[in-house]
Length: 309
Image 1 (cartoon, rainbow, N blue to C red):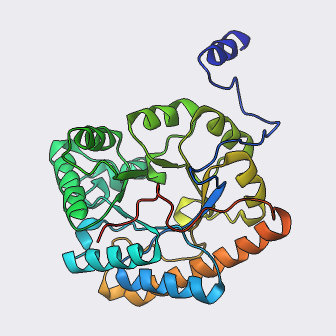
Image 2 (cartoon, rainbow, N blue to C red):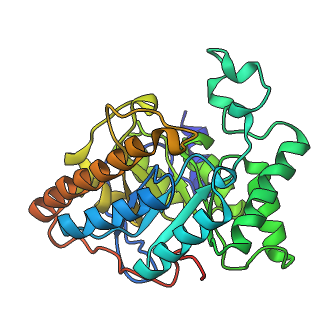
């Protein structure tokens, strides 16, 4: 294997996993090592509940993300999420809407095709999902969540052409699935702003990824059951040290899959959002006990995709 490993090194990649777990010297633009993300914030009431819970538990939130899609929210709901995010100085990242899991695909409903659910099938779905982004940006969004490299390329081209805001941040979903330094570097080169790694990568694997890319990594330290259900709270201090800059992302074990969300399950969505903030408080206690010198990001940092109102 030496020839292959040497060739990888000649191209600037690690020759394998970095089992020595080197300390990352990379940082967010404000000098921070980590930020906090609350996923599955499905609408303005859920966002308001996240902000209220953050105040109650005394924790800082830098970003919320959503999974149901821009298309599942009215203009007024999006404007309200943008208003709440702007006032709090946090990023609000909404997923694109139409995607394979909710279309007419039979393959994504098969056991072997489930991993294709967030992809865009055909050019019409690319157009539909991109129209979702255009609408969101017109309403004030400055962060969107995508899971298809074709759409990532298109959004970056549209930004360069002035068809989308130049400050639009493109966050890559965990459902993209790239799991090695080369694949993730290709997405960075295509215009990814942050990348959500698969939930089951080891620290040596994360270290090799960090050595190869510069964009922040979004990492579930508690994963929903359908993404493995891992609860990795005690790994967070080392994760921050090795993978910085990193978004520490609090999913929720033993939680209902609520996508696409709506009024019929809104109370459940809100309660799950509140518990994610409670889990954040638990993780913050671990960080403070075992890595008290780790630098948390500032609220309202210039590189966050804070909505425009």
